[in-house]
Length: 304
Image (tube, rainbow, N blue to C red; front, side):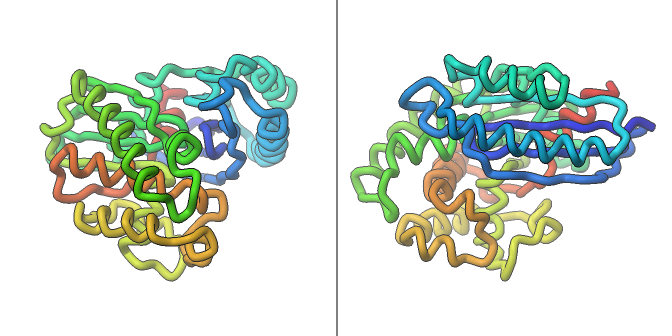
């Protein structure tokens, strides 16, 4: 049995998973997250803001304390969309290496997609396949199609932070802002569909914070409950209604929702719009919300 630590640093959040793995047996020891918004302004400026780097490195230091208290055999640190785009990424990469003594892997979108697919599907009945896994992140959204393994994947730049900064700069957004975001999102989905058969899956699995928060809203939870959200099935109609609800609310109203993480208040409207357009484009009648995602895939990658 191996105990491993994996860190996924995206555009909006940084997350740590420590897990014990033996063969196909997986035991979660610790799973935690901090919203750091590393990708603040990256879509416009193509560089990390110094404050964003500092926030993220503080989170890395807190993760190091957790890792040091748990004997781990291996550590893997992956950075995704924002780090791919930032011209000054080495400032961040060097900072992480100084703290953890590990090399940050800036993984391409297709590898990110494959890791998400492994994490999202390892618990599922293979009879539910083929699967389309959709990972709506802060900077990008990954589309991954496969059965027991990945057949095709595409990463497109329509994450919730990117769409918020580019289009939905008011809350509630204007009709013009929503319309321009929809054009951008639909173009990206069409691009993804060139290489990924988005209409051919038996099951659509959606992972990451946007999808799980939409699930929490659709389930009308009195608090964010990971166990109730995981593997819940949310109808396309519910997704569209939740997206419209967020579009009609101001930040204070969104913030007051009992299941809403404070770090998602200003990006959930864009994220839910992306998910709504994905549901429309795929024709899926429902999605399965998964709390298992790229972190789980990264953990398995360390023992395979």
